Image 1 (cartoon, one colour):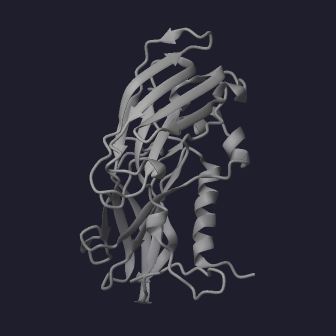
Image 2 (image 1 turned 90 degrees about the horizontal axis):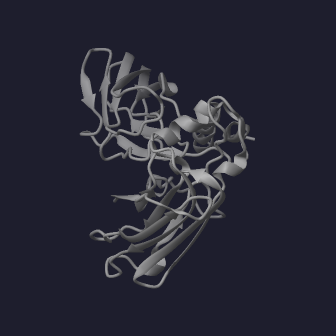
Image 3 (image 1 turned 120 degrees about the vertical axis):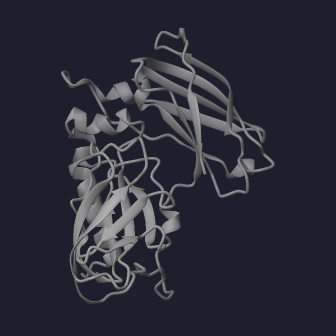
Amino acid sequence: MRVSKTKRLILICFSVLVLGLNACTSVATFPTVARAGDTVSVMVGGSDKARKETVLVTLTDFDGIQWDLQALNKVRSVFNLRADAKAKGTHYSKYLDLYSSWSQGHEPVQTVLVIDVPAGVATGAASISINTLVDDDSSGISSPYTINIDVIPGVGSADNFLRQQFLDLPVAVDFEKLEPASHAKISFGIDSGITIGAASLVVDFDELVVAPGDINVYAPESTVRGSFVETGSFGETQRMVYWRQDGQQLFIDIVAPQGIYQTFLQLFIIHPDVAGSPNFNITSSTVYDTSGNEILLIPGLEYFQ
């Protein structure tokens, strides 16, 4: 059976993600050769903060001419992929591979950049310089970095990654649906070494900006276990998250009977595009250890739109 280009793109991205859950950076584009006008993709580490609007991408062609792909509107998309929750690498990779992304403040993701090669680029060996302008890249490689691409003769065309939907005519992929929705990120810190047994939060928001019924809460799972020196138990990252809203506030309760290290506890309050900011604000928070004693720990909230 023939595999569509969209599926091939996703398969190769997932393969990279499973092989190195700490996320990786490309040494070449996918595909490694392209014509002027073609679409290529690049693995750009792992980041919660990378966005297509801010990433800097410069292509230097065989003649030494530099092409600013952001200014030329050739940056198609930046989005994240996650491995199958049942994948071997998700559960049984080395501790450092599983932990490194969390140490940068986010769950294991592979960030993918999709770009179009401009028409008029000279044939021959070229390079692409990329700066994601983020401080949470888990690849371990500092930006900016350079990857290689061979521009071959011919005139290409931007790929719309057509897909078939039921009996309708093929439609182009909507990259915007792959990119992050507006959200508030709640985290409990990374470096203090605190184990949390439970927490209760109250979050205020402007119900005139975002409809309460449109709000959702996402809690990323962590299967990291043990430490550098000891394997440990999966149960140490279990937690249950319950939430509700009354039209004016969100009420979020977290229970982690075996305790969860603060690094692995994150929450995302997600909503559709709106005009203005909902002004999410934690008005009340109480955090407990596994014995039920209150801990002096104030969760942080960042908003991304």
